[in-house]
Image (cartoon, rainbow, N blue to C red; front, side, top):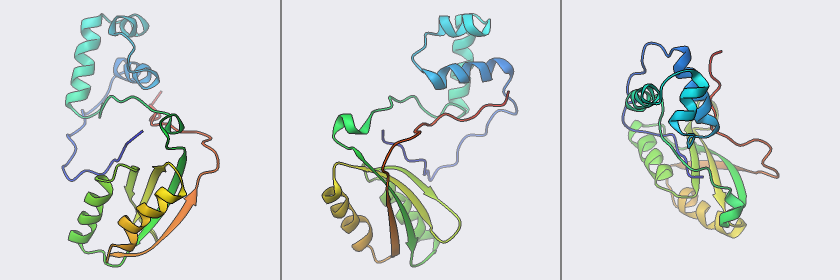
Length: 169
């Protein structure tokens, strides 16, 4: 799964409110976004065309940010998940933006968060083995003049992994 939530462009404004139909549709799509609109309509008591219009509106307004297949990393030779805290030397805007661009462009970086606290970034990385991670650290951290330090946490077990957002009841 390759996901990075860093963007340089502002997200579209969200609609002022999502009604109970929208929330019900989102709940179904978060479980399985291949659910046919006819079945979604039956589940939420709307016609398939009404469901289609609502989904299209939520895509256009940015409520639905994308439709992806969630891939099991081990099944494609990337069984090791690593979390990395990255602390930069300088917090100048152009250097932060450069780090965002570099992390976003790196395929091994599944997720990238610009955060508050001691670390400046938290990365979620998928690699084939520790040799691949070592090579990646050289490219991303040791070869950078703006990385002060980084801390690595290797996941021992994937207890819960997902992108589902809790929805209001």
